Length: 217
Image (cartoon, rainbow, N blue to C red; front, side, top):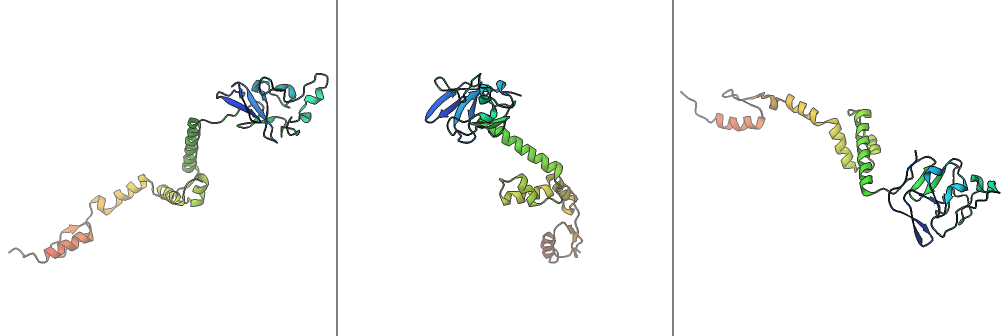
């Protein structure tokens, strides 16, 4: 799949800043990291060839020598960066751009906007939560497993996450529903009058009053 860049982009040659049309990509040498040319993603094929690349801007030379009589000069093995004199590609089907490496046929990478970065982070969070729900047993989960999924979390946050997994809200509600206090069971009984209470402190307070209370005739 091919694609074009939509944001404003610039190539840098020394201290010179050149604006490059958004439909073109910028070729950067993988050795010296210098911007040396431009390309149209639709023209790229493997192996890369000198004829696929154009100057970075008006008035600049072509990045590679192209001579129809000497076709070998344009082949991938013979291409050299005009600045460092080394081959600017590490692979025959991939090249470097200011935003990262790309393979032939891929979309041209570009620097992400704040909104795009936020969307990626949200998706990472969703993926991590899905992994936790589907691949990790809440009963046997360890802090090391959670730390791999949440490397940016502090230890306190990891511990809280473990508690939430082992005792989710639904489970806590079940525990509360099963407790004697919630069901209304009164297991503490007064020895004097037989009245029952849910809590021992309530029974103690009652006893002090009950044993001093005059008995009815």
